[in-house]
Each structure stands twice: as C-alpha cells, then as structure tokens.
Length: 83
Image 1 (cartoon, rainbow, N blue to C red):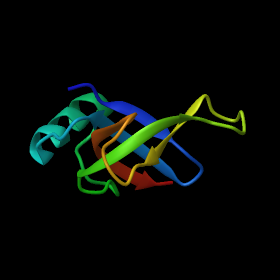
Image 2 (cartoon, rainbow, N blue to C red):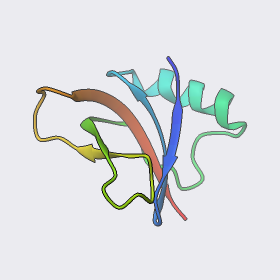
Image 3 (cartoon, rainbow, N blue to C red):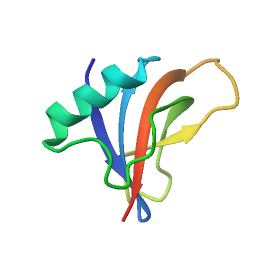
Image 4 (cartoon, one colour):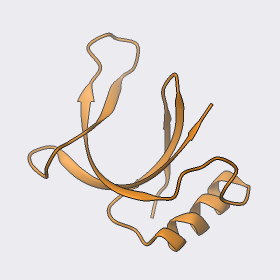
C-alpha cells in the first residue's frame, strides 16, 4: 500500500488506491505520518474518485468524487482532517 497526501483550502487528506482494511490503513498512516492515528483524522472510508486536470491552473490536477466506477474512476481508502 502506498499512502499519498493531498490537500485543499479546508482539508488535509491521506489516501491510497484500492479498498484497504481500516486497521491496516491506520497502521500505514502511523508509519508514514509519524504520529498515532486520531487527532482529528476521520475514520478511513472507501470512496470512488476520478483524477481530472485543474482548469484554473492553481493545481496540476484534482481528485473529485465519482458517482460510479467507470472510465478513469478508481476506488480509494481515505482519511481527512480539517485545518
């Protein structure tokens, strides 16, 4: 499993592609993030995202929710924390 980090103006996010067991995700988070899971981070959730170019030019690309699996959509396991 490879955890990736992304953020926007409101949230910090760690995610990995695919459906991952919550406890396995938390253990990997603790290893990568260097602190115990918790402290405002949401319970890991399974979602479907799509990666799209950012038309504003502010970011290279954006991860956006997808309503169903289809071309370009992929499953993620994700946790977020408000700033």
